[in-house]
Length: 142
Image: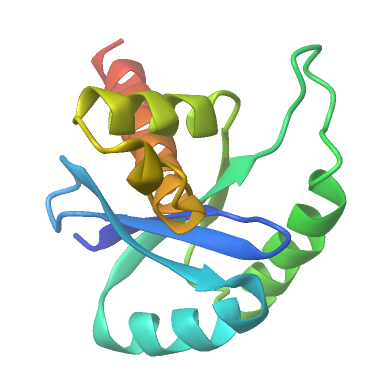
């Protein structure tokens, strides 16, 4: 069983999170410049077995696609073309950044550290992945 990899795709930066090999726990991995995301993924996927890539689905409160969807869709299409053997799934990313900021406050990070956008993106990717894994567990229990 390979890891799950989560991507919080952004205009400038992209947060990355991965699961453990048993797909139980999501951990933030890194944040990369969006312009270098495919270089990073190429290197990572050569070293690690990944059984699914989960990409945050940008939605507004009314469930319509957010402005970032126009960037996410071409990214996902290219991912699927480059790595046809790895399934790519979307998972709702609404509130992930707010939840990441709250997680940082709860962890006692200083205000200066909570302004670190790279850390917010990485934690957001972990939140997306943990939500995806939990929803999958719930579906399998039914």
